[in-house]
Image (cartoon, rainbow, N blue to C red; front, side, top):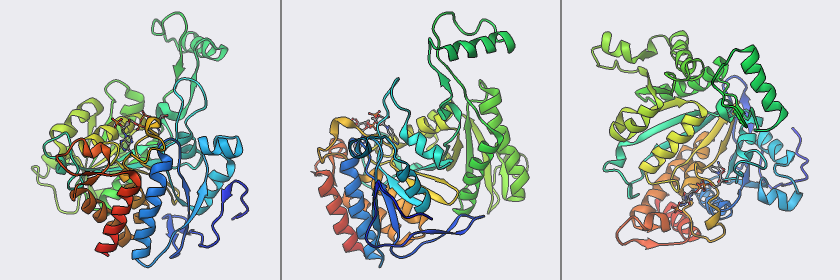
Length: 422
Ligand code: NAP
């Protein structure tokens, strides 16, 4: 454990969270833990401080405190230290185990690779978990948003996000093209002329450890089903294999606790036995319409990186949009909470956007610390605030009446409700 950082604001007080059990990833959480926070780019400087304020209030209301450790990535790191992602930032998160971050901008096409992806990969946080549930009072484009209560486990380290790609016009891409055409006998597929080529690795190890997290979660939370979402009809040896490994894992490791959808109909006549989890699978394009038309049939979802990204944004829209949708990354006894949304640069610094997504990501983090009372308080206070009509611009434009407030005012209103509810 090294506590000598140069590019981190070490708090004067607070204790370090440590690992209690290597095997289970269980943590020793003091009552005043040090928690690293990256505000992030764009609207990160609006939603980050708002989130801190709310989480501080929830901690205080339950007899605890958080010692925040400011760490830097993206624009703020470039300004302060002339680098995108200081090693100290990664080390601080690795050593303190539980952290929260706002969004980081990724340039499209050229420039540096995604810092979000780099952080998740470096720390091997292989599960990106995105809960999608409706908060009373939040306007939604669908008729029954309350039917959505889904938790998506998105694989975080593989797929076309692995960063194995070569740019058109380079020697490398031509080497890959020759290898494919000359040695692998891929004929008449790649058009002549400039081409970019990317690789999509999906491994048994990566798939099974992600699906295991999803099934364990479903069992622990008494959820009914885990749906494996894939495009295995087209990408047979990657996405199809993900599905097959999922069913294999369910059979190998869970015995009678987990049954397949076929078992459900063939052996149990559609009546799910108490205490079981049903594993089923859906093709990704079908799934995107099913979450609209048969919303309440989906519970826990396990899927690969790209599908998971698309699907959780679409599901997020159903429960009120990106201003609401929370997330967190997990792996090896670590948690890095982060909202689903990006840095929305056009609103940066305007004290305008909705901080709910980052606040509810913080709620996931509190839950992971084992502070369920504080986590529930955050959710209840957010619900109370929004249902009373106190909302930011994004929700205000969708409701009749209501009071439009700034990011910071919205956070203050939540803090007031935390104090009232506790
Ligand atoms: P975005 O930043 O999520 O913003 C898209 C739109 O979503 C906004 O214009 C706004 O819609 C709405 N929105 C997002 N966050 C909101 C909030 N907190 N409150 C209210 N509305 C919100 O997506 P983007 O414009 O595609 O991406 C911008 C940058 O963020 C890119 O560089 C991208 O790579 C990065 N990004 C980072 C992460 C991450 O850090 N994990 C994730 C996704 C994207 P309206 O204008 O319609 O109100």
